[in-house]
Image (tube, rainbow, N blue to C red; front, side, top):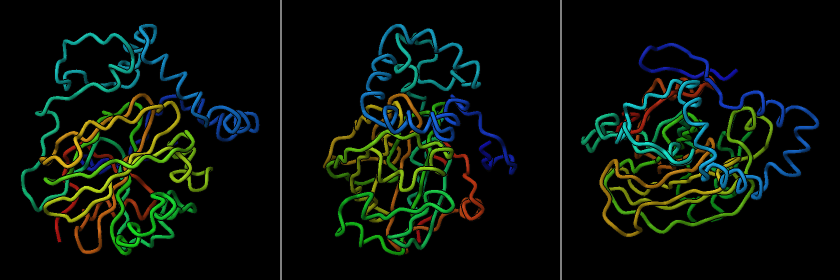
Length: 295
């Protein structure tokens, strides 16, 4: 059971997890854990499933998925579009009206839809994954020089469920550098896995870049792959001027994670998000939602 905080209702809700029984089995049972280490965490499994989701045979899953998880298709950029496979549906674009973005330069917005955790005044060697599990920014980036610049800064972890909108965006105007790619495993990023795989974010395939934002300084964007996420697609152009809310990229099928690192004294995250994080609870947010203010 995964509990999250709904900012609108100010109440806790239980997440509807796609493949809940499967996740519990592969990460908690002896046979499942062995299968995960032998096959599921490896690139081949995610590639094979990714090919299936790109095939016409996967289209039959779409209607049931929409119904089971109450997905509002009226929010799509084109609500009448017919998807030829599951991945086309999964990476669907939403209308600008459904995800408004504040033009106030003092406001930090969420880079995507998902469940958000926020950590302030971070210790580079002990960034929280979940309670009891931490990792090092140096290990995550494999770049000591860059990591050192973010001591005492802010870390935002946005976990995307398979039911979420799976495109991620820029949080400010600015220019983004080249993407650096780090190969790795394909563990699930669901809390069930996070509570059992130490330093999972540093184990998984990931990509990162430095975004030189106009109002919040240099921000590290990290995209973490996961089970069945054989591909992270970057759609932005390095070195090109970016507007707040512009798309950075998207994940193909599977739950995934976007992590942002901001330098010390650049932003103050909203109190409710920080408080819920201190309790070990994620806060549900949508792309473009206000989550903090400039310092």
